[in-house]
Structure formats: structure tokens, C-alpha cells
Length: 409
Ligand SMILES: [Zn+2]
Image 1 (cartoon, rainbow, N blue to C red):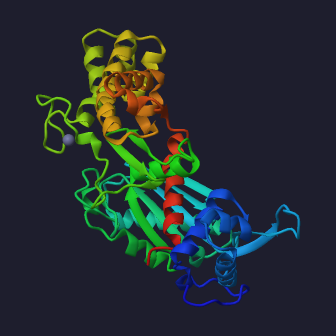
Image 2: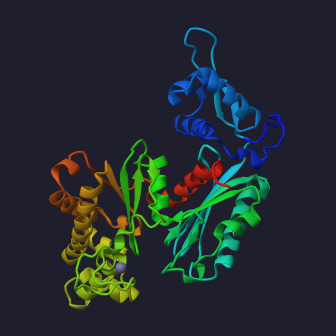
Image 3: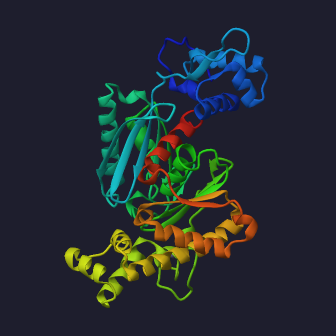
């Protein structure tokens, strides 16, 4: 913190770069709700005198506010400290291949306003992000506030992100975004905001960690199954990015050296063998071979089949559809067994569009993983669908913004 203006003056974003202990105080309050100075000193294992000094400066700078009184431990009732509700807003942006989801939240991560709309990520990034900025503007207008009230933005994108600069590197779905300065573009529209960018599965893992089934867990994996397959790695409660941001790109692990050619140029990658398009292609082949009346009827009606159609067929008891889903589940579970042996997570959460197709997929992934992984690594292992479902991305975007609100320049 550079200086300490009086609490009544507007918060100057330049004072929000926190020292590590200040950031730890913010994190403790965010995780536990309002805390007293004594609670904070116990949580952080610092003397009450040091905590009191630092908290005083943070209240002065408008970052923390006293919000009421806690329970007395015998003497005077202690004041509780919370993140200043007037500090401003954070924004989560979840960019998918065909849609964008934007949410405005407070500094506790509570969603206040939200909007989603179809959008095509294959076009120009400046046009796409211009629309995103307009959507954020619409949400701010609903609260009757200006663009300077946005203190942090967290953006999830469906492609590989070099995390520190926040740029996409060779993104197959969105080639025009290669190297585009997303942070600078949004900062020009929201001058007070710190902007962070991460890939979609890391964003979802972060959402699950902060607000979903992973809350309170230290080490888990989040597998996204959609058009592709990716993995977010939570280690010690944080997203693990690796040296460059590429950690968790498990969709290109080989499951068949003689398999079909993947868009990455290799043969038999997990995602070309088992993700949504592979499920749809196998369904079409079975329908055309006369092996499924349900899928043949759906194909005749719509002219195409998706993984969701296969899920519908399986739910209706269609044998071919169940076999197709189990086949994908076995391949994903086989790779997952290797990941579980390697990483020994407490849990694996499965999300993404294809996770909506029913429980046959989950049970076959579970079976294949448990059959192949070691006894010790699976003794306490939970394998479940994501609790946040389709909201994991936008919630994760908000938490990415919160994580970086006080820490990046
Ligand atoms: Zn590949």
C-alpha cells in the first residue's frame, strides 16, 4: 500500500497492490466471512499487535471496513472486519466457442448481475472483446455505476494461454487471437481494472475450488469434456499452471498409436478418440448401420447427431448409445488412472458440455479409473460431476479476478 487516504475518499486503485500479509488478511476474510482482529491473528499466526497495525492501514485505505460486532470472549465484543462493500466490482467473463457469459460480482465473489449471449469466437478478437466490454457496461448501467468502478476482470478463453502476459498461443479454435493483448484491450475500457486471463478448464477448476464441490479441498483435478478434453490442476488450493501455462493439456495423451489423426497432428489422442465429436461420429455410424432405431430417427429428424442425442438415446435404454458412451468413458478413465497414479488427488470433478449426457459416462469413467489406478491413490478418491455445471466458468472468472485484484500491476 503506497499511502493511506481517509476512509471517506474514493478508493485509489494504485493503493491496492497489497503486501503478502495484507493479501493473506483479504484471503482469510474472503474464505471465512467477517473476522475480528483476534480471529485474524489466530488464522495467520501473527501477533495481534502486528495484525491490528496492518488492519488499521487497510481500513484507512478503504480496503477493509468494520461491519459489526462479533461474539464476546468475556470482555468487550470485538469489531468484525469485512472487505469494504464500497470497494467496487469485479467481473468474470467465460468465453466459449459459441457463447459468452459475463457476471458482475462484489469483492466477496457474490454475483450481482449476469448476462449470457451467443457469440462466435472465430472472428476478430477486438470485435469480440468490444462486445464483451459493452456487456459489462450494460451490467454496470443496471447498478447505476461507471466503468471506473470495475477493479478487476478475470477472463476464461477456450485455448492455450501463456498465463503471465495473458495471451493465447496457437489456439486451434480462435487463430485470429494469437498473441492478441486481451489485458491491454480491456484495460483501455476499464482503466481502474486489473485483468487476468486463463484457459477455460483452469477457470472452471478455480470456480469448483472456490464455490463448488472442491471447496475446502487442497489437491484435485477438474476434467472438462466437451469438443476437446482438458484438465485443471488444483494444488495446495491454487491452480497449477506449469512453467508456461500449458499444464493439464491431457487431451493429447495418446490412447491409440494407430488411431485417427488429431488436429494437433498426432494420431489417436484422447480427445479425438473420446470427446463430443467422437461420440457423435460413432453414433452416426451406428445409426447408418441400422444398429439404433432411436439414433436413426434423431438423425433423420435433425440431419446430424450430437453427444447430447447419444445421452438421450442412452437414457431411453438404447443399447448402441450406451456402448458408445461406455467406450468413451473407458478411454477417459484409462488416462485418468494414469493421472491419479501420478498426482494422487483427493477428488476428480468432471464438467463441460459432454458431462451433461447422464450417469453412464460417469460410472464408466469411475470403473475404468478404479480398475487401473493403484490402491493407495484411490483409497479416498472421489470421482464426481462438477457441482457448478455450466456456471463453473463464469464463477471461476470472478475468482480469477479476485485472486489478482490486489496482486498484479
Ligand atoms: Zn492431439
